[in-house]
Length: 549
Figure 1 (cartoon, rainbow, N blue to C red):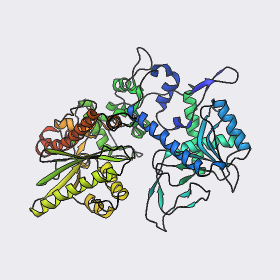
Figure 2 (figure 1 turned 90 degrees about the vertical axis):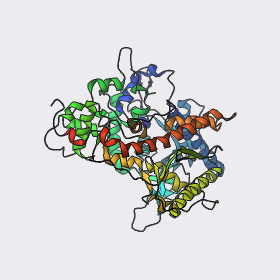
Figure 3 (figure 1 turned 30 degrees about the vertical axis):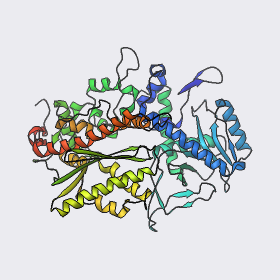
Figure 4 (figure 1 turned 135 degrees about the vertical axis):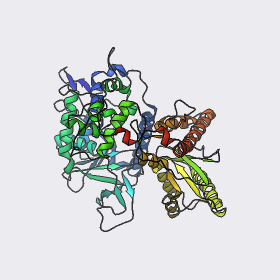
């Protein structure tokens, strides 16, 4: 909701901090055509993350308040917004030390509105520090290094900010913008701490990370002025492709009858963001490049502010898209690591709770190492240990037989993350490797990332995801809804997250989806070895000439 009725009956536009990051055009459509989305189901992945975040906030609230109830005031959420705001203001006026669920008064003139999980009175300098509770990581662990910059943190139950040598900050612009938004609202009423900091409690719920708000307030002010002008209809917007489009209802839905969805609008205009999404499109537009054809026809020097892939590749991407080529070879001969013994690996995880399935493919046989105990569970350690022991046994047997060995995944970021996380969380359980053992494996040439092999050897106008690349090699998934977000919905049913009996058909669905993923990497590898050179045009076929020529 971005609008409401003001004190004198006039229509007013309001903006909370959620709108400060993301697509400006979506913000406009949400505010001007709210009825179009009435009854439209929310994206399953977005809904799950929202529910998980709400559960995390409740856990944090119950834990902190129970530890010292006399110091807390919990604002009842079932009250009206006006009642919650009045109670919050009265609590700050009274100097209550810790306020949960505070809501600040809506600002009719600026349009600001917002609330905060925790308002913590600063015992040293007075005023209040806004602290938000989020369901993502805000820090990463690290070994202490005296030469490093140490972020400021404080303990959960006492206010003692100090540099923390045990963690590094994970940049979260959304968190910083929200804290700046809340600081400005507190500042308006004279309740902002002079310390100019805001806090975040993340997924691990082990400390409060403090953000220095001073350096970001100017950026926040500019961003807020732009966004509130969009909502008020003072600034026009047009579609432009960004990562958010994958889950946006406006991508495939027109805002009015007879209108166009964002996808239709962009494709109809052959908009440059289709091949150069996000900030790339912004840079190109500054140089007069509005369409794919403009980029395809580029002549002359590279833009001096282009900081992405080589600009020649951007031109080739445009030319490939214009001619319908799904891939372009960067190299004369496509190569991929091959071995006598090859194992394909793909995992399934659920949010930040863990990896419940490690799927493998060896000699055409699929094996899934899985736990169906709802995450988080210690049984995850058992299934991971079984997977790791099996993989190392295959590796050792290959070495004993004098054969080469390789294990393959697609985009190793997730696999590497959960290999390390599993070793760390289940250390000491039978069969669990040490982090050092994990490191030796993932740093070895026997751990092959097919995503890297694709990225290094192909230009991909339509994206580099496995669901985009494997079909070019002739592979298709059995399930038309196959995808990471969909699998999370299947998982909730498979383990009866909402109660009731587990849905065994969803377990089968997950296993088949995982099997298809490892089959896809095998098919892709074989195709790259045998047919890619003949089937994919070379970059030399898209030289610096106009498409018309």
